[in-house]
Length: 117
Length: 118
Figure 1 (spheres, rainbow over the protein chains, first blue to last red):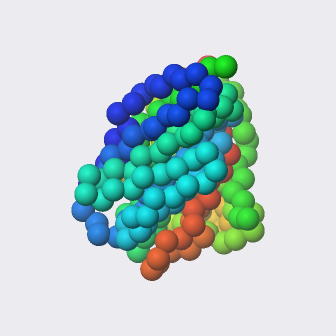
Figure 2 (cartoon, each protein chain N blue to C red):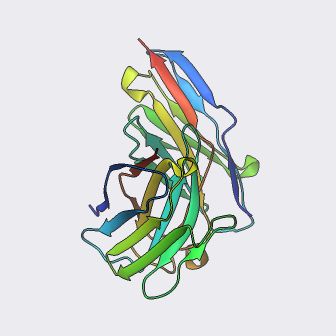
């Protein structure tokens, strides 16, 4: 069975600090997809990124970057120069073979990020 | 982009009553929808897979008679919490993939419904 682990329950940083959120996953599938979502206090999930298992290239989007390493089954997320508006709960998630799972997601426990001014 | 809506966004009810939550795909058809539950400060847990025209598939530990799911059309799935109790208070989120089959099907989440049972 698939599993996603986010070992950091809460992280608190001061504005402008860089912060990395860790994500480790387990799956027996060779084809799978990894995601990061942001959940602000309103509760609505905000999609940040999707990666498939065949694409290990790191990605950068503005202040956000992601490091995907199949060798360690990790998909870490870094926010550079954090801002107060980045405060939220961040979820890492895994979707296995779409033909069987229909793209349903297994979520990690989430990391509460607090960025203090 | 595709949008999934949920109604109501927030509901408060008395213990013992039933509550219906709607999930609609607004600009695409969804033969499958997923229902997740999220308790405070916890992760999202998949409750069931709603299938248009057939019975829902429930995850282990989820009571079928407690959480009734009806996928009446290609754009609407409903979750009814029957005889709700305070322990059913939670944030319920639905999602709908834009398709099913080979390759990844973009999945869209609803904004969630916050249920409080008094």
